Length: 223
Image (cartoon, rainbow, N blue to C red; front, side, top):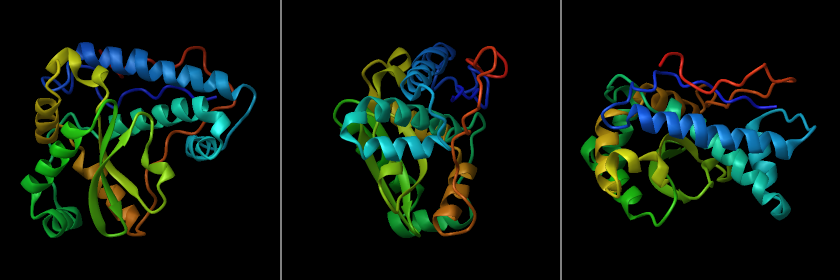
């Protein structure tokens, strides 16, 4: 059984870009529901990892519902970790790669915002690495990069309306601009980029537990 991981920061820590109200709804209801449905669909199965569930379910057309809920559970946990309550700057090998592949941080921001704003309907916009090369791409609905061989996610921003509508209404581009300026966890992205180059292991979702605790965590460490 998978448990809902707690947020790595307070519900209000990402304001003003993402409000306390949005985080309570997004993490405590949307993400929680994906985890609950995932566990119901797994029944008595005890998978080794959520990554395993996502990949195996994607390969079986009859397990589309399982894939959608497993992938969305994974995507959201990655999303929380890809943001920081403290504004960060790029440095090290990652900023060198950004300069090489995009021409600089502002050009990366422009590409990221353009991709996310132009994406039709629900999904996710990613900064990813293919070996040393960086790229920006978007995926639809629950699709993530676990099913794309050779791609390592560095950052992601949620394009589903529940991620930004309370705070930015229908201004997805405005949300993405504000998000990129304030919230990326660049130290996390640097770790992921090192893993993409074979230096250490990429982030993985918390493993399932044999038996759920009395109540799954549904909030941040503090409110």
